[in-house]
Picture 1 (cartoon, protein in one colour):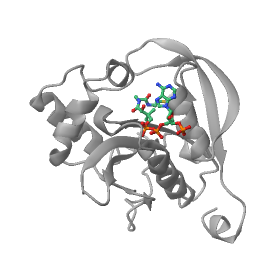
Picture 2: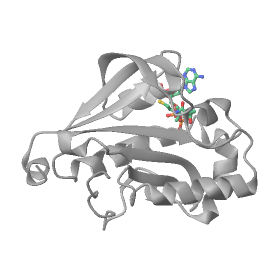
Picture 3: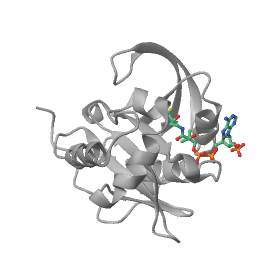
Picture 4: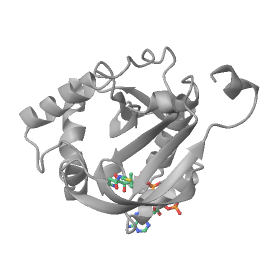
Length: 192
Ligand SMILES: CC(C)(COP(=O)(O)OP(=O)(O)OC[C@H]1O[C@@H](n2cnc3c(N)ncnc32)[C@H](O)[C@@H]1OP(=O)(O)O)[C@@H](O)C(=O)NCCC(=O)NCCS
């Protein structure tokens, strides 16, 4: 059993136009939209073209991630409309060793508007509020230009290649690694 995670954030992580909140049953429609993208379903636990029931089962799994010690699973919400536009997660199984990974996906109809970079900025700032977290890594397929741009816009830098990275579906692929390091300074030092 992994160590218990820090508690759910008392302040909602937010940046620019988006906030990050707990995944709820109201997100089943957004999850089904994500499930229309074969890349999203190949790299996570949503089945391709998920039914309402399968989407709700995914919601339930996401809501269990914190309790399981896996990490923080968030819906990305557009603040102005209150609409769920995507999903992101900060995965903390290695928190005691000082590092985490992050992932994100935006529903197809909301892509191309810069939501992912804002969500990643909110997720990353939230990460630095966690004591002991020094480095957040992203694993990006070499062809995934939109994700590379998202990483760069959120302040991540290239950090080499991870060979044979295991995807959720069991397949292994070479990934580009992008990393952000805890910024130096009094605010960040408080959480060290
Ligand atoms: C990657 C993803 C999250 C980006 O979300 P988004 O909110 O659409 O991101 P943005 O609108 O900020 O677009 C990102 C950048 O990529 C560019 N871009 C978008 N699609 C592109 C494409 N097919 N080819 C090249 N560039 C592309 C955009 O112009 C933008 O570049 P800019 O910063 O120079 O303006 C989204 O495409 C997605 O959910 N993909 C499927 C899941 C996924 O790949 N997740 C990441 C796993 S590592």
